[in-house]
Length: 570
Figure 1 (tube, one colour):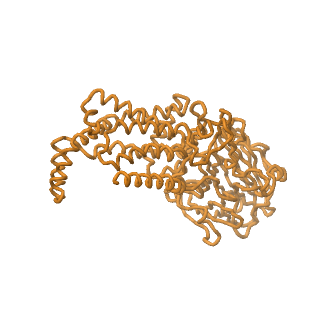
Figure 2 (cartoon, rainbow, N blue to C red):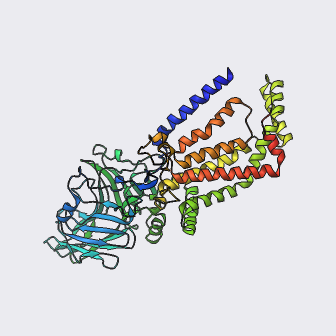
Figure 3 (cartoon, rainbow, N blue to C red):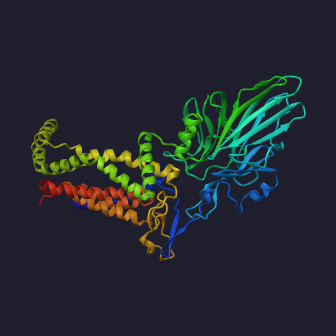
């Protein structure tokens, strides 16, 4: 009867995990990037990724992008990492692709499009201008004159416009070899009286990000104000009814972030500015930064500098801009979260190993070896403690029978027994406790850092940040059948379950039958649970299991008494 009850309880627990875990992960732990490939007839085929293009042309587009681009005069952008054009009507940077990043793992797929002009689906652009009263100012319909046809690192471009009343407005644009555009806004007063104008810069976006916003990764409005980076504002908070979210700061930046991409404006870090995030009609959102009014006397010139970042959130690039340009907390555009102190070292070790080996999967394997090597002494004590606990089980049973009605005395006697036998019941949990933050840190690194995006390993695994696409349920791609998501278990998750099962078989067997049954089911439950996660995470866990098995075998070969103590009683 007890065995039947235990089996029922184990079955209920299994169903609760399999059904409840997907619900939990959707809210708190996004499992992986969308599948990057599909195995067809035994070959990996790249899948399209329309979400990578936030302004993709489609049948539902408001207007065709190419048509809209032809309607206005433009200055071409030609830089090593980005390409596109500047709209001279309104002085908008509204046409930008990231030349070194592709939508899919196919090297012939289109580059990532980041910015798109107003009038197209999911328009996304940045602009510069002035606000004020009593003076004619350039607006969204102003047509600017450009000093040159191409903006490149070697050829800056100045946009100019005169209001006909003596004031000349200029926006001097320069671009570096990365993702940063610098705009110097000048106003020269040739009139008879003083004028006042407030320079501003803005980022406008129609629609929200295609990337999921969750507890572990922030996607949406973002900024640094007063020395702290704000991840708490979501698109749903920016509605006309709620009004604008405003901040005052000296130093900082503001904009919108996707999982891998960022468009943000950073005013002069030495000048106070007012930043605001707001929502408008038609699913439009805006981030802007405005500095205090500049009073320009007759014959004088006033200027301000703002930087626009539009590109990939590469850790090294963000850190370089933070240190070289002094942009406060710019590296925090990557939402590391609470475990930043662990995640960043994990990332830098992985990145170093990747540059050393040229293969990110090999780098993960080497990282696993490093982690297990550092934890080797702790794991040795764990195995010895687990075997020792198993060896004293008969004595513990006798104490429980003798003092079953006197719990304080039972606890005292059990503590004495632990001291006499030199075992620690908590020691077996220590390696697991130490592994949890490392495993979570690797999960975050694989989820957040663009350096890991579309990184291949071997054979069919062409993106370690996506799930393993090879599953036996369709005969490894030979059948024209896509299994349901919950059943599409790849080869790596299966290996993870098998290695976990072998590892549990080497561990001391629990005396309680319920615990034994649960431990027997856990490897196969985790096989299903881990299937939707990134292949890199599955690889780490599988290799870690193999190293643990080897370590246990080695320990038992040197100390046969431990294995004898671990054997289940007959």
